[in-house]
Image (cartoon, rainbow, N blue to C red; front, side):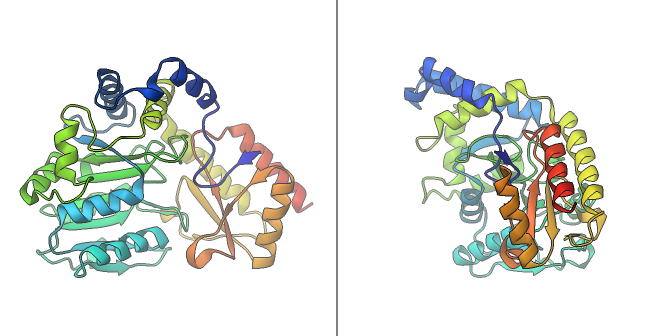
Length: 353
């Protein structure tokens, strides 16, 4: 089965070997307060910083996934309100979740064909956290490095948090331009679901210490204190962390992966532009995602394409949110091989023959 679903997506084939190694090395039953886990945690943090260009003075934490990070950040870094900028379902869900914890949270929606409207933002000085999704999985858009830089320059005194679930470990993100980044590993990391990576700047940790919120097992200040010894506040996904370490050891540096994904996405956008009955959902090239390609057609055609693809052992991604029925999505993640995309192209050429 060729898997182009945008998460959980294809895992690296080496995972089979890593799982066997984990059993043989005794990591599956290792105490999470023991030296074996501490060494694993320390090594994994070091590899994350080295392989995907996380600044040395930033802190890294392990969570259950990106959704948990929404909760951690709102409860541990805001007393009053956060401000959410979004153009798709996942950014909006983060905003909705924030309002449940902090009813004063504010948000601004923008069109999927427009860049993030940094110059139009009116964010008050009482806002403690600015939140946005760098790569919106639901509609195949992205916020450019230039927009992130402009936001960083305009609101230097406010913490900025970025959901990078569909881009971290695939694109060469400029972590220094925001205080918090987070992702789940079932996309560009090429791993099974069930592990999240939370990256925090020294400034974010300083704010967490100031708030000193300790009412939850995943309170950020408690997580920070435990991670000083490379431990977690709770029993972590030890196997997930082990697999993450092994994948990072064997993968190229993110700069090389970034170039591969950018080139391949351009090729895919050009390929799908030739079909009259299928349109690129995102018309503006500037804001198209490099890791999730969203394609639009009639509901009937979308349904037929997905069924025929599945018959040929090709799994395409469903649409999501407002685009559920009239779009399908294709993951462009590092674990998916070029030859698999060539087979995907052959399917579409045959479909329209």
